[in-house]
Every structure is written in C-alpha cells, then in structure tokens.
Amino acid sequence: MSASITKAPSEDARLRYVLRLADTSLILGQRLSEWVGHAPALEEDLGVANIALDLIGQARLLLSYAGELEGRGRSEDELAFLRDASEFLNLTLVEQPNGDFGHTLVRQLLVSAFQLELYEALQNSADPRLAEVAAKAVKETRYHVRYSASWVVRLGDGTPDSHARVQAALDELWPFTGELFAEDDVEAAMAVADIAPRAADLKARWSARIDTVLAEATLTRPTDSVFPWHGKRGIHTEHLGYMLAEMQFLQRAYPGAEW
Amino acid sequence: MSLGAEVARADTDWQSQVWRLLGEVKDPEIPILTIMDLGIVRYVRGETRDTLHVGLTPTYSGCPATEVIRTMVEEKLARAGFPGVVVETVLAPPWSSDWITPAARLKLAAYGIAPPAEAVSNPKRLFGAAPIECPRCQSAATRLISEFGSTPCKAHYMCTACLEPFDYFKCI
Image 1 (cartoon, rainbow over the protein chains, first blue to last red):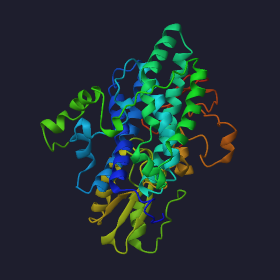
Image 2: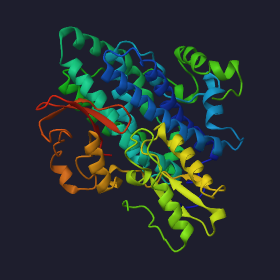
Image 3: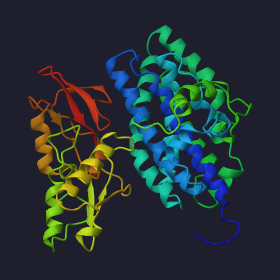
Image 4: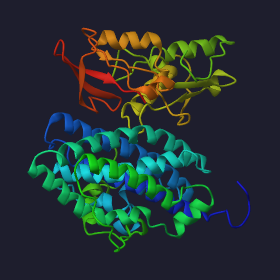
C-alpha cells in the first residue's frame, strides 16, 4: 500500500469499521439464537441455530482483531459482554425483533445478501486480517443466502396468508436497508485505502440479487426510505438495549465468570 | 496427505512422531475421522521438540469442535513428551472440503454420511451440481430436507429410493 497521506486511514477509522462488521454479525447471531427450541420444525431450528453459530464465529474473529486494534488489552468476550448499547456499531436492521419465522427470514435474506457481497469484496482487502476472515466467512454466507432466499420464495409464493405476512415483513424492514449503503467518513476512508469496497458498488450487486429473489417470491420491492438510521454510529432503536440486557446478564451479574 | 498442507519433513524422529500422534486425534463430532483425515492440520514446525508449533484451521468460523480439538491436541502431545507445544489457529487459506482425504471419504460413506459430492475446485461444477448419493443404497434419487444438519458442516437429505434420511457433508 502506498504511504501517501490521502491513502492512510486513521487507526480509529479502521477500528470502527471492524467493530461494525463484528457487531453486525454478533447481534444478528444473538437474535437468531432466540429461535432455538421455538422454530416451526426441527430442521429449521437447526438451520437458524447453525447460521447463528457461523455469525457468532465470524464475530469472535473480528472482535479479537478489534481488541488488538484498540490496544487496550480487551478480549473478544470483554467487547461482547461489557460494552453498552451506544458503543455497539451494528447495523440497525440486525437488532430488530424476530417477529414470525417469515419476518426473521426476510431480515436474514436482506443481511446475508449484503454480507455476501461485502465478504466477496473484502477477500481482496488491503488489510490482510480482514481478507482472511472474509475468505472464510464468504463460504458460510453463501449457504445463509441460499437458505433464507429459499424460504422467502416458499413463503412469498405460498398461500395468500404467507404471502401477505412476508410482504408486510419486507415493508417493515426495508427502511432499515438504507443504512447498509449510506457511506460515511469511516467507510469512505476504508474504501480510499483499498481496505473496503465502495458502498455504491455493493448496492448495485445487492439490489440485483434481492430483485431476483423477490421476483421469484412474487413480492413487491418497497420504495427506499429517506430517513437515515445510525446504528453503525452507535445510535440505536430501543430494541438493542433489551437484547443486551439478556445477552450480557451473566457477565454483569458475575463479572469474570467462566465455565 | 491433504492438499495444501505443508508437507511433513520427516527428517527427525520426533517430527514423524508428532504427525503420527496427530493422526490419532479424532474429530469429537465425527469420531470415525481423525483431524488428519479432515485436512485441518496445517503445519508442524519447530527446530527442536521444545519449540514445537502445530497449526490447525477451523472447518467453520463458529465450529464448537475447534476448541475441543485444540485441547485434545495439546493433551495428546503433552502426554507424549511435548509439554511446551503451541497450537496456533490458521485462517488462511480457508479450509475446504476438498482437503478431506480420499480414504476419509470412504470412511464417511461407510459411517452413513454422504461425502462432499464434488471438488469445490473442479471447474465442471459450473455446469450443474453433481448428484448426492444415498450412503446406504447408493441411489442418486435423493432430496434436500434442510441446508443445515446436525453440525455446521452437514446438510440434511433423504433418499427417495430407500426412504432413509441421512447427513451430507457440504462442499465448501
């Protein structure tokens, strides 16, 4: 990488970028694991649990790297269990409640299709740590897209009731997708340094994939919302705090507990 | 020898001993396979037996067996006279089901788990997926039940000829 001033991002920007990736996977993994023991069938219970496992695995690799970048000696566990909501930099979309099973799978498709394009691009990142995590994650994410897309098609092109419910889920979740591609100074700095792809490139490929699935599912793509969400800057909906209260309970009540 | 792994330089007795010991460590979730069968041992390094480093790669980012395997390797080598062994996690290049050895594929099928149907690196894969055969009756008349099975590395299938459900080791 060239050492010119314009290309060298600040280490703070890199840390924030890595935390966004890590927290997005962690929070979605935690949300999905709320289905364990409650999914409509055993196979789907295993399916969502396996996706949650992949996401939490990716989050662990990324949080360990974030801890090293931060340089304060914080481990992956400390970052996951001892930060407050305003310090989490996940996309607002992933903290939204599960709703019914179709609602969960619509959210999964929107996020997994985004992560697939992102990890495909990050395999060529100028940051070797991100490149190796992405090369691993991209293989897993292909299955997440296949699984969630097949369910969105089955339910969208299913009964009038299932169609109406997944269309309602899509309409409710779509406004949160704007944040995925709203490039801010952190992401712009990463793109200039060849660490991350440009948001506009990601959006074009994501849109094409989503449109194909929606067409097969006989669902209507909602119009884009102009209202911006800012989860990746630490400004969240009320749902994240409740979720963290449950996720972090043990470490808050019994600091340092291990098993 | 699995593809891509650093080839063992069996130029000292203790190094070949380490490789042999690693070939005895079983996968905790698929106990008919060893970690050598799976191709997850990436290297054995060290100038002397006191500076031994073993590189392991996870099959999936969140695979819970990874930490169990790490502990099993440390214990196995410590008991065999390598108490200072350092086990390192290697992410790149990412593990591929292509690294499962040919002998291990036969072991999987005999155990009732259909092995990965084709090589991820095979360009013919672009022209359509290979059929997944039932490990019990070898029929190619099978159907997917779920993309995910009992562990992250497997999918759930059913044979429409003999009607048995079975696990399929996914291609990644």
